[in-house]
Image 1 (cartoon, rainbow, N blue to C red):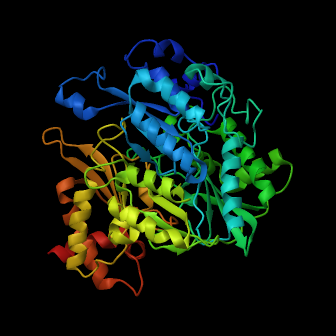
Image 2: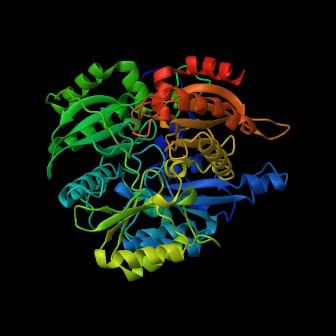
Image 3: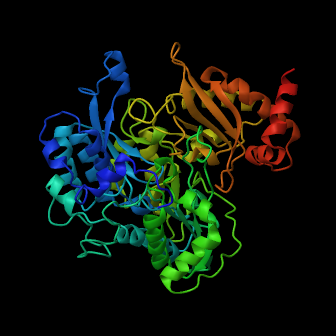
Length: 575
């Protein structure tokens, strides 16, 4: 351990949980009474999240969560891939046990919200019956492995990258015996094609698992939409024609932090090594062992791998890994992902079929009076042999569309009000907001309910300045956890506090990140009331129009000028 302080409660709960069993079985029998805090911590490792509807609780003037508690179940989907049969089954499960809504996550996963406690076991049993699982989608384990290869790549490359994401996910899946016993699942919940089928424990996490969550993503130098630099481990494929020659391995990325903590900060991952495809899994396992044994378990806010990499330095990290592996790591090759595809236009894939990105408002797959996305997808699956991948931006990438089916697919989408990404404005194509209030327990301010109005106002300002076609990347967050990787955006609006009298949120505004995910934004203004956000940003946008270089993005302009000079210039601009 890196410090001598006493360990937080979560470490005791994990270590004494008997393989994530705890008292969950007993507490499941207590009707709709919420799980105790210790059991709620264990539930996260099962992919089950206890939530309270804070809007309903506030309206009832009741500080207790009793009567306002519901659950969200998060499914793993390595590389954001589910089959048509999986999607249809998930829709049915959401209708039967949840709120008839499916949420897409920024890690390419799927969530079923609005589940009452007495339906949890039946939902988990239904998930296992279709060959999916929720274990490890939360908690101090390896999260959903991200990968979103461009459709234009050769099919064998896409298959190799997707297979790598699945293999990593399988090899880092924890012992699921306690999970199966808790929810009374069949003897195995693993998918039939699991590469580790038959192995009860796929990796030795240890009794207390990891010090914190662990995130991995696979990207390419031509498309970093998976944000490899924001991960504990990022893998950037070196592609030569129809062959993956190797991977540049990045370590120690992570964006969540505590603004008031001087030793807490967002960090981009550091290049560690260049490895062959066959060396990827052994190296990842060695990194997990290093993190398990040396990560800080005494201070939760410094529990992520990024702090170990920062404190030790990359040279010491490399030496430790080489000693564990028994072979030397090749130095990383120069590599800077130069693009991040938005999949807005119909693209002819390497398999000879078409693909296009679909706009998903707030990442919600549901049916409303104006947008019947869930019904549209059901219709597509029953009409055409299409594929569907969740993107890291909480959009859907529709693929596998044959030439003869393209017009029919477009008609189905139009009839149900579903827009492709090319049919929405550039700023909405690139922007996102976390789920925030009312269900997220960490949310401080509004986020997804604030974002539409903010984007409306920003679009108006951009149009007035002649910048309406500028693909500005804006991300709104309800707290500093960085769930939507907000600190990489060109403009990040992050919830900080809320006024107790007016209940108006105050936000930190960061500027200067980039859409390619290789640069962090810097703090421009702090504690800005929500009603003043547009006023704070407008002078910056005017300066950008006036002083930008040819083809310079807003984020690149802010990074070049610097926030200090921007504050001074913006103040002069307003005089």
